[in-house]
Image (tube, rainbow, N blue to C red; front, side):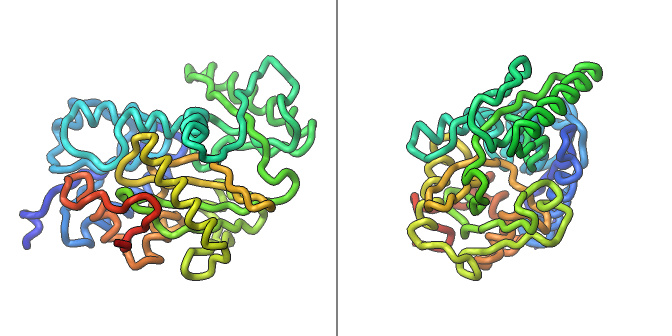
Length: 333
């Protein structure tokens, strides 16, 4: 089949948010994967923000947006895509807003019985931490651990609040809205909990991955820059009881369905020393760089990057079924 007869895909990357550089890497890899699959003809556009008029002028059968951050994956871009009317990869605007909001995600988890820690909105007018230390402070509408503070003492909590106050003043001076922050207990307290993640493609769970950062914190540097983080993959080197593996996959599939998500997502959990699982958040635009977890999990079960990207495009076009029942993984059944 010649390239001219292949379905055309417009891949969007970049965006106006803090994760722009990661988005450029992810979208570049996706465009390359689609073209390498031999099933699509992809064209990459690196953008800041766009409007409907610009999008209408872009010829494509399918749009594959891959912008990390509140504008690109949190609803505003999805509003424009829905008005455009062409099929696009990823969750719709309502689901995108729900998943981007870590507080709302916790409400959905609690409602369907998926354990998650309590959370408090950070009140900059109150200098006292509302719960027992240690705690995590993080933005409600960001990813990649941007803006995250680990507070193990009153002094660290005070310094974190002061840093957020400074950031708030600077954003207001720049004409930007302040970022809301939340506080949640640090799972495991002073003991490091195990970090687990599960990807979803269609409706099917990918292999579970345990994240083992060298210095104990899976921050932006550990995710995208350094090469000393270990990833322990189900079926290879992951040492995790089978009941825990099944439970974390089932939790993820139930959340995916309850929140109205589609095509792809990745949910993150902590496993404490007592063996209890705690849901953290779900990401509807998980990274697609060479450090990223969904491509790693897919590769572990034989789904190479070109086929993974093509499968997502085919899901959006309705060319393949969404897949598995609850608890199943790709390739089962």
